[in-house]
Each structure stands twice: as C-alpha cells, then as structure tokens.
Length: 550
Ligand code: CA
Image 1: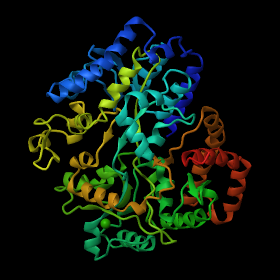
Image 2: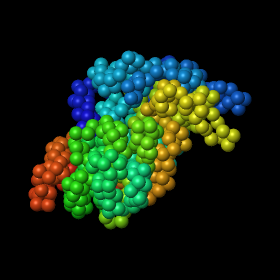
Image 3: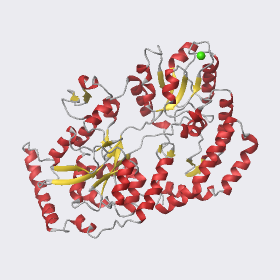
Image 4: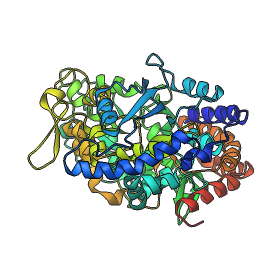
C-alpha cells in the first residue's frame, strides 16, 4: 500500500509539469480530425453491415473492428511480463479483429513503474495504456492524458455497456470520482479473495472440531500451542500466523469485527479504532499474543514466512489466498499428512460471520489522447467482452490448452495441466489471463485450482451472506473508494501520520511495551487531535458517492 501511495504522489508531481490536453482530442473522437480518420470511420459502418452479412455465411470478419486494418500502440506490463503481440492468443485476437498491436514496452523491460514514468515524462503516450495502479490511471485521466470513455462505450461497446448496466461492482470500479470512465476494468465473476485456513490433520490428531466461533478458535489455538500437534515433543507450534506483516493488525482484529481501517457502520464510514468493537478486539489480541497463540515474531516475518512455517510443520491457522493449500501437495513428502483446509470465518463475539476481503474488478486499460481512432479502439476493447474474446483470455486456445465438453463447458487439457510450471503461468505464457479489460469467469478461475483451493472457493462463493453488501471492495487491507485529487491530497495529509501512529501504537500494545487499557482514552484523544473527523468526513463522502447517495 505504501509503495502505491508514494508512486501516486510521484505521479501527481511529475504530471503537473506535462500538458496533456493536446489540441485534436475531440476531433479524433468524432472521426473528423483528418481525412484519413474520416475515411476509416466511414468504412466502419459499411464494414459492420458487411460483416454481419458475411458472418451469416460463416465468414471470418464477424469481429472486425474495421475493414481497414487498424494499428494501435499499447503500453502494458503485467507481473514483469511486457505485452507481446506475438503471444499465440493475441495473434488470434489480432487476426479476428483486423487489428495490429504494437508493444511500447520492450520485452527486456521488467520495471513497469519506471516505464510508465518514462512514457509520461516523454509525453509520448501509447494509444492504449494499462497500468498496475488504478489511481495513477485515473490521475492520468484527470490530467487529460486518458480520454473519458463513457460516450464511446455507449456508441461502440454494447458488451461493455451491458456489463456496466448489470454489474454494480464493475461500474463502480470503472467510474472515477468525477463520474468519468477512464479505463475498462478487468472484471471477475468470483466473489472470494482470501479464506481462513486451518490444519485439519492437527485438529484430527487432537480430536478437535473445526472452530465455529472466535471462542472455539481460542480453545483450538490454545491446544495447538500446548498439545504438540506436530509431535516433536517441543512447544514450537505457531498457532496463528500471517505472512503479510503490513496487514497484521487487521488480520488479527477482523476476528472481533474490527480493524485499523475505515469501515461502514450504520450507513456511514467510521474509522474502526473509534468504534466500540476495537476496545474488545485489542484486549483479546493482546491476550492471544501474550499467551503465544499469535506468532511472536510476526513483525519480522516477510512474505516467505508462510513457506518457512509450513515447511517446518509449525504453522496452524491463517487468513490467506488459495495458495495456502498448495502445501498439501508440495510438502506431502516432507510433512506427511499435512492438510490445510478452508473453514468458515469464525462467528465474532456478536454472533456475526463476516469475510471482509473480497475480490474486486481490477485495473484494465484505457485510451490516450494520442489514439487517432478511439472508436476503433473501443470496438476492439468490446471484443474481449464477447464470449469469444472472453474465452481467449480465460482459456487460451482450443485443442492446445483447453477442450470443449459435449455440454459446452470447457476444461483444461490433461496434457496442458501436466506441463512443467503452473497452469496459470502457462496460460499467461500464451497471452491469456493478462491484465486487460475483460470479464473472467468463475469456471475458468476454478479450472486451475487444486481440490483444496476449489473446496475453499466453493465454500466462500456459496455463502454470499458472509459478505456484507454495504461494504465496498476491501482489497489489500483497505476499502477501495474513489477520491478526487483534492480529496485524496487532503486525506493523505491527515492519514499519513495517523496511520503511522496507529500502527506503532498497536505494536507497542501487542508487545506489551505499552499498556492498552490505561492508554486507550489518550489514544482516542490523539486521533481526534490529529483530525480523524475530517478524514472520516472525506471517506464517508466518497462512500455515499459509492452508494449513489450524493
Ligand atoms: Ca511441537
């Protein structure tokens, strides 16, 4: 999170110096900027009619964005994989749409942020731009580097428009605080993100049931601590661990319906430490840490902490992604019987069962002011929201990575699954599952899952009541709400120091270097003194906007 904020700030700085509002923006949109553009636009409507006729005869121009070949430059780098038009999936997509894509980032480049900065500072925007940080993309939109897509979608992208009309989460992710759409998100049908995981083999060994409530969980973790479930006659178990150090307070406090984030309470956002649940949650967290139920060295555990604790047969319970179950297979030899299974979120002290982390539509791609034919780009974008386009992005190539069953469902091929590497990695190597605007299906998402991950996903997908409908996507430990640049600047100015103060104070309480009970009131006073009220007001205003109430 911190990294993103810094990046956004750096961007804001760099962009004030660059005039993006170039002259012929609107001209390009209407297709009358140059005679060439005009011709191309003219031939499109003809082409559309023609292609509809020819598709009835089985022609292959059904998905053409234009009879005249279109060429777009494209800035994309996903997980250190710069976009490559030569990927087999994209070869097919280009052929089908009559589009030629030209990558702006060299294949040798692995630093997405640096390449993005370079593009901005050179004022040399690609026609199509995707980037890891949606705040930065929207900022580029506010600054005039990306064009608003609302009208283009209405006119040229019926599949995207349909999704905007029918899917609130997609529309909310797409829409910036000024009401404009600057990028087409990557949508996801699955709701789940993270799960609660517990060692089923340890429960079995100690004759315990999967905990149903947070009080049951306390008893189970205490048994994990004291009763030697790993059987080495040492008290070396780490009952509750978490590899995401920066999310530690939240991962612990969720158990008692609290956090150190903003959260909706009775229709308005509140800073969770100001809510009554926080006091109880903090008392419990301190107690659990003191009794050794929580990882004693959580603050020095990096992302590899999970690997280390699982390999050492020491970790018992965590909140994490589906990959937490990979050890069942990868450590089958070294830790015989190891079985991480997903469990329902334990009921909190008020009897509620809530999962806060939720999958959300992610960042996709937008159209820059430099694009000569934005309407053609939009038609191209729309293709990936057709069933055909979605299939390429979800499944790769028929007969290569997947087959179609007699009932029309799709399945990854046995020989593809048997290939070296992970199925997702191999799909990405073909150009599928890339970070572009499209709608990923649940069926495809589950196709690469192990049986344990699939059981987890199905459990959480089925229980929709675990996800509060009034809560905006809670990703990466924070509510994903859209702020204007002005709101964002003021909010960060207030919350930067507050967040540091709260995190530091939390650690001191947990470690026992400061006493929670006697300092709680002073803590609240300090938050008020630092103007938590104004930060809450800004966030609540964004939340009311999210709900469509202002
Ligand atoms: Ca032990």
